[in-house]
Amino acid sequence: MRITQGTFSYLPDFTDEQIKAEVQYCLDNGWAIAVEHTDDPHPRNVYWDMYGLPMFDLKDPAAIMLEINGCRKTFPRRYIKVSGYDSRYGRQTTALSFIVNRPPEEPGFRLDRQEFNDRSIKYTLHPYATEKPVGQRYE
Amino acid sequence: MSDVRAVSATPPATSPAPAGPVAVDLSAAYHGSNIEHVLEELEGELVGLAPVKRRIREIAALLLIARLREEQGLTTEKPTLHMSFTGRPGTGKTTVALQMAKILQQLGYVRKGHLVVATRDDLVGQYVGHTAPKTKEVIKRAMGGVLFIDEAYYLYRPENERDYGQEAIEMLLQSMENQRDDLVVILAGYKERMDTFFQSNPGFHSRVGHHIDFPDYSLDELMAIADLMVRRQHYAFDQPSRAAFGEYVALRMRQPHFANARSVRNALDRIKLRQANRLIARGGIVSREDLARIDAADVRASRVFATGTDDTTDE
Image (tube, rainbow over all chains, first blue to last red; front, side):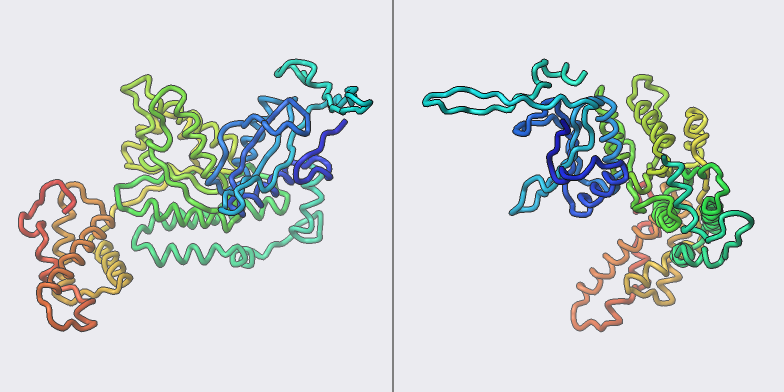
């Protein structure tokens, strides 16, 4: 099951050229760019690991591509996303983020039902990938 | 995949005929690239430096032709763009590097055309594991533009084999090779020391395509520079003060630590200081002309005249 999230979740995966163009847009806006990765595909997982430091005063997307490719090389089978952070007063939030790398096979989710009092049911999304410990998923 | 795209993208970029000899209007390409403007700026702003200007024209011509050849499908190896600028202080290396960045941008060899100036301190770290991220940071900042490494020979310290400079050198070499599309490196410094630096780091020597030597300025050229600076700052020499400044420069040139145009600029800064003090001391009403004029006394008050040969400071 193909995981989607972030700004361009409805589009097919970007090519490197398209990633560069988006990164250029972030740079033009003066947003700080970070490369993050994770092997926990749950949509509520907001704590991704940062690859290197966030990048501030860069001029050219090639430098960010260098980091993205570095991250892809280190974690070829993890989710990697690029985020642009708008630090302007009044916004101070992630302005844009999109996935640039995903594992070749994504096993997807199972729906767990938990019986509760009065015949009510609670639902949980259980990613199959997280059945293995961190670092061994998607291997 | 990339091949297919390259082939399908080329024809509209050049002319409709896919095969056979295709003519290109060279002068149109020359004017179209806007490079003429930058070269004229170089010619007009920089006094002297005839060999440097000639080399830069040559390089610009080479790059323009290389680009036209590429458009015509005459694939050649991408020209090496890394350069070394050698010369004594104040001979305009940084200024020319700025112009070079513009030229490269006009010709489409770098995307942004900004200049990042770095010295050993910016590249080499203090402890183990500090150098690589530091160097990488600078390289990343310079991507899409030109990385200007001033006094590059300080990177290499043969007397200390555990010096971290070697690590920075290796990283630089790697990105000079692998990120050739994204980064142009210009190394600068004194001629003799750069020569030894290249000898002990053959990797650099083979990756640097153009060696440009900046000659020292002659007295006349330094005076022309002074005139230019004075005019640009809306001051004016009169006849005696210009003569006095000529004497000053002639004396100063023989002293140690003479830094060509930079020494001229510093001398002018001090002359402006003395002029201001003279006007304040005199008081009363000053005319517009008084505010602009540099008096011979402002120049002659310099210590260079008093002692003949001065102490080592740049006074």
